[in-house]
Image 1 (spheres, rainbow, N blue to C red):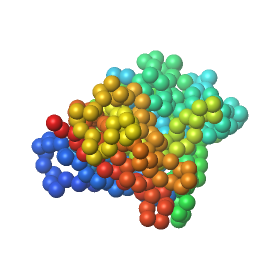
Image 2 (image 1 turned 120 degrees about the vertical axis):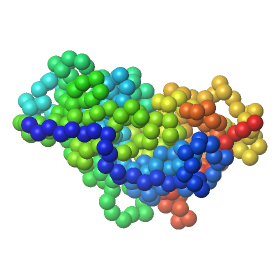
Image 3 (image 1 turned 120 degrees about the horizontal axis):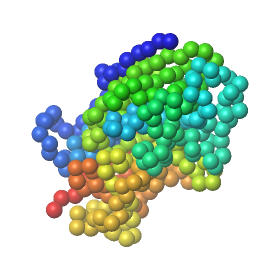
Image 4 (image 1 turned 90 degrees about the vertical axis):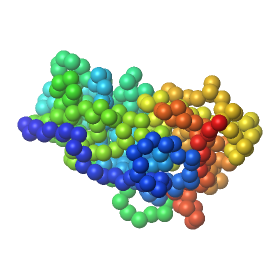
Length: 351
């Protein structure tokens, strides 16, 4: 058995872009901007984290990480939704005894997009309420209560040249994993290929400045999500639910930072007037959604009759610091109609 220790010394697979003119540490909300979101084109290889009040953009490659480990007193672990990961609980608590014959029949079940209505149980809560439900149960204090899981590792980012939307690459394979509490401030991951009769172990320390500590089984600690209150929205490929048909892969998707109490709602021009004329006085505080990270989701764009943004709506967002913004989407394609090039405009709402 091989053991590794992953502390919050991060391997950097990200870039940071800013539309500010200086790096002043003094907190001053920015008035707004027009942002080209570097999703990366038709393969949509990137997750892009946007902080509106500081006008910053953080970027990481979607398949650079596997698991996220919650920072607080709860011991919760999330899967990389953007690569289509899924996990199914096994009866065993001994990772070394699990073999291919034990899980062969589950491989067609623990997967995304198989048109089975109940397969949402194998992905984390799609609303983003991760402290209530994750595909992997909350990690228990007693080791003997933590089971082995069959993990579908999802898909790599597509590696090739294409002008067509292609967000799924080669399959990343299967793992068996078991996660334990190492101590109050860290987790222990046991993991192996299905046919292995011994396993490897990794210790992951919590990072209290972030919602999650992110880990790649092959690459160690990975910087993904910015600090807890330094992002509002994430542009990503997303596994959503197609009601009655189970999980489904959505491109051009947006989640919001509900874990830091960010809220948003859709404002229809037919009801509130134009984006340009919308002021702070027109904000309807009863409409903010704080318990569903998909409140913007895919509702900003359509693919019927060609990929384009809706022009009959915009969005109102309240960030974790209480700032109010209006934002609208300008396009989702480049000049040649290729997807993966979203652009938005936003302004802070002041008195």
